[in-house]
Length: 394
Image (spheres, one colour):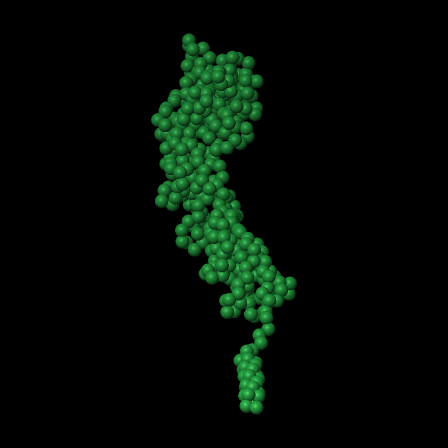
């Protein structure tokens, strides 16, 4: 009897213990609805400029104020929201698209990596989208150097920018690679997208120079350098054995370089140090003074002058070092060439050009006041002017 009572008392106590335990659980635990993390897709950034960029993404699935949504970035792969480079969106459209504006200066020529994200308010859950990359294009393009002489050249570049942007640009140059602002520099200001150029002087002849375009950063904190190019000032020996005295910088109209052989030609070495311009007293149509017209002038003269004692013909018939493409330079060509030689301390005697002044007189070079100019006082039948052949080639 005593044993049965003790068993019943134990059973009741166990039941009460279980009941109390269940009752305590229901009071202490609160049921929280489970939130399914959204899926996130990273889209390509847009509108990269000097002030920042519009970062883009798409979110799908369940999302609400429980998640912060945006895009993070870095110069390393797999950027995270914990880094300081993160921008949050101010709103998501009905189809899940969102923008996040990054108030950040993205360096030109540097590759950045982006990932859209969704992070829970307490930071315990972070979902990342795919990674995309972007390299901001350099705004500066170096163009071929033009009008290369012994001591000067025209440096050329191109800048891409907004129409209303006004940027300080220029060139740095040196006889060593990778010049910087600490080397020689020339600058100017350019508005909008445009080509620009700057003539530099004080160079050394027969010398290789390295050039890079540059611009001042929009925040005035440093410089942006473009791709390097190089050029060589003239004054070196050309393939025809003479001096290269002009370089366009690139082939234009079928030629790039001008070369002069600095020894006078003579129709008859026994009695002449040169040749006649012509025995004709007629005006020859089609001749020009302009730079780059000497070959055409020479061919026109040869077709209109019957005598062999003719400066243009002597040059056209000349063969030196295997080159037979010599001609008599135009007025502007010969003045330019003579002044270029002067910078090399090479002085020649006055010579004929392939340009005429009128029916009876032709232009010759004349040294006066420390520089070479033109004289139009010489009769075409004068025999004592020097004849220096020049040639053009690529």
